Image (cartoon, rainbow, N blue to C red):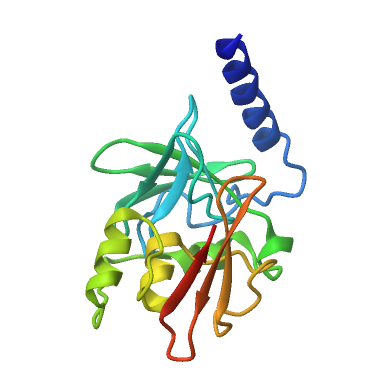
Length: 191
């Protein structure tokens, strides 16, 4: 019975991703085929097909992530874009919904989360480095550290990164709230 439930859950997840009518694609973008480096960790479901999202699923079953500065080849996929890690060959299908990201285009979003060259971050504290390496938010991290660790927050739930409350998706159905104090340090993570 448990095996059947897991199989149906996987099938449902794949169907939801593949049937996403409001997703935007990199199909016609000149970015396809180029090599990029991710500015932030990219979190994904590890299933038969690895799936990531602009919503940053940061705590789902079978969770994995591509650490920031992974060299990635950008490919086409009808619901967003495909990423292939050059060193490991890991493939991740990345869904993108323009309406949930301030109506930016998929090309603008790629420019937001990717860089044509490796990125360098200075001034990170010990909590930032620990959280980034683990792909988690922890108390004492800076806003920059949280963004590197968890990714750019989805704009439909966090309209401005100037806010002291960022909302990330743990999975398709549950969120995680990261609260910052006035100095921009994490004071709470719920749940």
